[in-house]
Every structure is written in structure tokens, then in C-alpha cells.
Image (cartoon, rainbow, N blue to C red; front, side, top):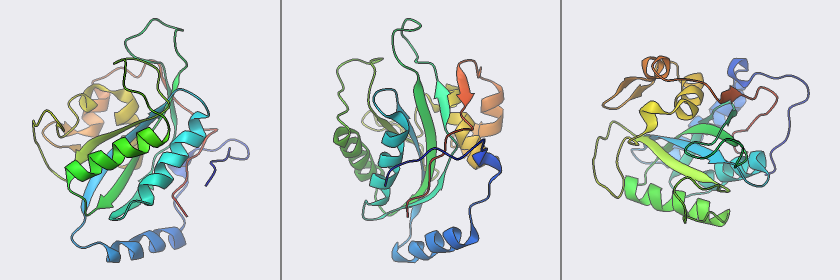
Length: 203
């Protein structure tokens, strides 16, 4: 599936998902036994960023035991930890999904999706075609260094909190509190909503 630009100005935060789509997604949940809810953040700053994010969403949906429930608006974010202007800006988004996969398997799938888009992990703050991070998994709090839950820096990242808040204004980050309160506590400088762009639930 190829992502497309919306025709004319569009604000995805105020466009309800059609009832028919909600019904299809909810029906798909019946194929999952005791699914858990997870929040995934996506980011890309190389190549066709919008198409990459949509491709990642579609790839996650194609994973057995995963159903995408909601897709956030797109934000454009200045890169962190590097000299201004030294890298292209990021497109960021958040998806909420249900899954029967345990956190470790979901992480493996996230890495596989990154690798499919030629992600290279050779520099901490380096440019990359795709980031797929698990922000939260159910109410799990775990300091395992292989996969810390929730994500140890999610609470201080407006490019994660802002799109998540757009999707779920009442969301809670386990162990940290309300996403709305966390978002109020961080700067949104360099994090801009792109109302002219849209990502879509997989068909």
C-alpha cells in the first residue's frame, strides 16, 4: 500500500474513522486470543518518509498476531543530538495495536520491519530510514536492558507524546502518569503537526 497526500488541507485529529473501518478492525480482533494493547512510535528522516511510515504500518499489520487499531497524525520533528541542519527532519507518528505476541517477539518484529527498510544501527543519533520503538505494552513496567518498558525516554519526547495524545487524550504511560500531563511538561519546539499529510489504517 502506498501512502498518499491528502487532497487539500486536512486535520486527521478531527476526522473520525468511518464506522465501517472500525467494525472491520474490531471484527479482526476476534481472531486474537487474549490480545494485549501496545503503543508503537515510528520515525523516518531519510528517503520518502511518508511512504516509509505507511509501509511500516502495513508491515506491522501483516504480522500474525497483530492488529492495528489506530494511526496518529503525522508530525515533523527536528533531529535530536546533532548539529542543526546536519540531518533532514523526521516524520513521526504513533500507532496503537492489539497483539498476542509477547513483548520480546513484538520487539523482534519491530527490528525486522526496520531492517526491511534498510535501517542501519551504527550511530546513536545518526540519520535513519526508519525507527520502530515500543512505547508501552499493556501496563507492563520492566527494566530489562534488552527491552525496557515503557520506553525509558518516551515521557520526555514530544514527538511521541503529541501524536499519542491526539489518538488517546486520556492515555496513561505506565509508571509515569497521564500523557496529557507529560506533554505539558516538555517543550514542543521543533515538533510540528503536518496537517497536510495523512497515514492510513491498513486495508
